[in-house]
Length: 501
Image (cartoon, rainbow, N blue to C red):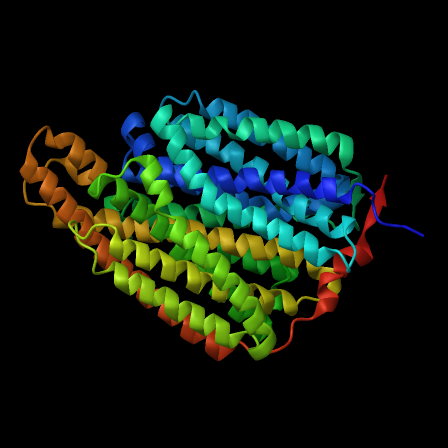
């Protein structure tokens, strides 16, 4: 007797659309950053917060929203998230200053956090063991298509319209996903888990304060004035979070997982991968448009080598895990990533795109090799009854790493840029490369000096990135233990599921 949902492949299309809108928005925004910076007169710190505000809210609410989906219905929570994300995208088209756009990005982060865990939970409940690999392969292919296509699409829209158009493209996709989800998708619930509101508040507050502290270092120093307050809030909130998670009977994050070597090693690897990727893309986008003078569409096309080699590395990494375990692909991938960072340290203002293209290709290959191994090691240690929490924790670690990457490398870039400019340069020009070019007003000397200062600071930034990735590779290799992934963990959600037609 046929027990599979007859609409399951149509449901998969809805889930892919829902996940795709988040990816397209993030990648298109990366290409649009220089135009947004110029149009809204945003400082370097404003630019980082336009990106980080979304990431922090998204990461901070993932675990909580997963529990809401289990309790109230995954389809319901996903559709609420789609409505909020679409409404915020519409509002972003009318943002007139950095503060408004940052506030709108916070709302988009809330919507995204409601969407992502629900889509994965629904996919697991709709497809059985036999068909789930095909569904996940389709999911991955659509995500890779979005990774390749969204920067190019964003570039086309910016060239022909304005940066506001990158938010408009979210609206028809959201509308289609809402309509299809309402008509095709069954409701899905799981076992009720007691909420941990204090844990959610402490973790979100701690991460926000930590990144705020990092971003403020160039302007305020590491321990002076506002920076000291931010650091104190981060330490107290994150420390309180750890203590609370140990004593509460229903922790948001089962910290005992970190006692397992593969979970800890996989977490470190995943976080450092996202730190490198998030910061690198922000820096290179500015290099391509402000130093090389690329148009947004040309800058978007420049990221194709990253996507293509990431797809190849991903396929090779999955096969390598089956043969060697986790440590070899993690180590190999991170070494290749470190080589990419090392190559980028040699880029100058007159180097052109050849070196960055090779570096992006190496970065994609390295991340593609290391990512499946890190995630497999992390998920393979989680008991079936904790599979949902582990999946959300996996997303949270990655998003937190991405936020920290933007903050750390962005702060290093901003402080180094100001330090390399000639003495007597105005405060407006010292704030960012975009500000320096705007302040030049036909002064070729200042334009040349600003571009040289940016690439010099970029070299220092990527040197730090390379050292960090090498350290993470060594740590992960020493901590992790090779083991075959446990297929039982992938069945956890199905064992717990409860479908309501």
